[in-house]
Each structure stands twice: as C-alpha cells, then as structure tokens.
Length: 293
Image (cartoon, rainbow, N blue to C red; front, side):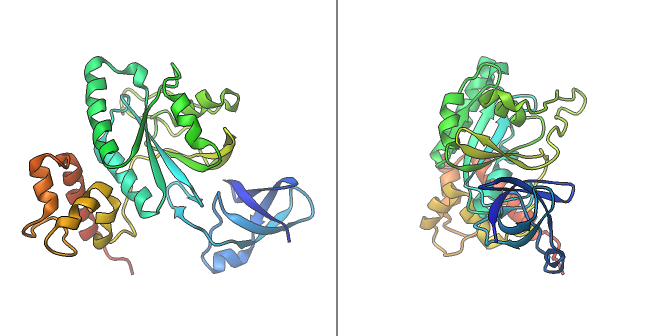
C-alpha cells in the first residue's frame, strides 16, 4: 500500500502528499471507532484508484501532536507575536511556550511588526528578548513590511516541519507572504474596537517554503492546560527547571516551600519576576482545573 503525509485537512477530506502527487482521501470509519483523528503532518498508509477517491487506512505513530492547532510530527514551533497591534504579551507567550515545551517541540520566538514600534517600545522589547534568550530561547525581531529579520528566520525553516502559531492578528500570514510572496495568503486588518485580528486562516495546511514545510494555522486567543499536571509544569519553564535543581526539597513547587532556589532567584533578579508570576498563575489554574471523567 502507498504511504504519504497529510498536508491539508478540510471539510472531512485529507490531502495526502506522496511521490506521485497529492491524493484527496477520506478516513475509514475505524478511526472514529478507535477515536483516532488524522491530523495534518501525519504519516499515513492509504489506498486510491485515482487522485480524488482515496481512503486512509492507517495513521503511523506520531512523535508529537498539538490540539490547537491540530497538527502532528512538528519539528519546531515558530511563535509569532506582534510588537504592537495587538500589544506584546509575555503572559500569552508563556502560555504558548508551556504548551510547546510540554509537547517536546522546539520553540522559536518571532516578534513581528517591528516597523510600527517607537524607541521606547523597542527598548522594552529588547529587555524581554534578553530575558527569553537567557532562558535558552531563540528570539528574532521581524517586519513583513521592511523585511527586517527575514534573513535570520529563513534558515530555521529549511529542512524542518514548522508550525507558525500565535494570537490572531499578529501577522502570521503576512510574515509567510513576505518570506514567499507567491503564496498570496489572505490577511486582514486589526479591529480597532476589539484590538485583535480576524481569523484569516481557516484551516491547517502544510506549505512548501525554503525547502521546508510550514503550517499556517488558524489564530486563537487562549490556551488551556487540559493535560498538563502540576508536577510537569516546572519542566515547561527551562529557566525555572534549571534553578530548581538547587531547591532544598525534591519536587519543590516553588510556592510555600522553604529554602526554594527559584524564589531566591526572583528576589536577586536572576529570574524575571513576571516569569515566576506566570508560573504561579498556571500552577493554580492547573490545580483548579475541573477533573475529567
């Protein structure tokens, strides 16, 4: 049986790329029975008599998967955040980072719309970028209008499966258009009333860019930690995880425990206070999460 990769999912159809082209497939009923939903990025086994009437027979084992956006087997997540319009948010960025870290996907932070910033905003963003770089993250400043930073971002895309993710309206599609102009992805303006963008991307699709595959995904405004457990949150903050090795108690949650190295690092300025505050907020959110039955 032929094998291929799902590069687009739309209206119940899965478009499978293989050595002979792209085949439009449906999923067999067994997937619904076994509660398996094929995802963009899945390696699959399929059968087809032509390029319009194929059926997916098997989904190969995944190395990772995301729920929002729905995609599998990702090498890295390029988290696109705007400098302004909408305003840069460390709280939202940390939510994305936690989700990506939990799924063992390498994150790259991309701050775009730098052409719209003034000197004060640039200085503030430089400070945040320094904090995240100290935590071990790659941070790239870009602009779709001036092409700033595109030469730094493009090499990261080559030979990888990347997911472009971020809040709606931050300019993901504009950035992809700037990297590969012939894509002509639909973009939209920010709502002045709501301060956020419309969802211009309606589905997940893998696009061929710079000898890699990039998923342009629907934007979204919130993330929930549906599977993350309290004990796992520490590892999703690499800077906190490293400092926590010096905590007196193994399994320290950095809340009320004595001789906590993380709390000491906040006081000394080694760990940015906002990172610690976000950690505490997320921890309480996970604790307060309603149990699933």
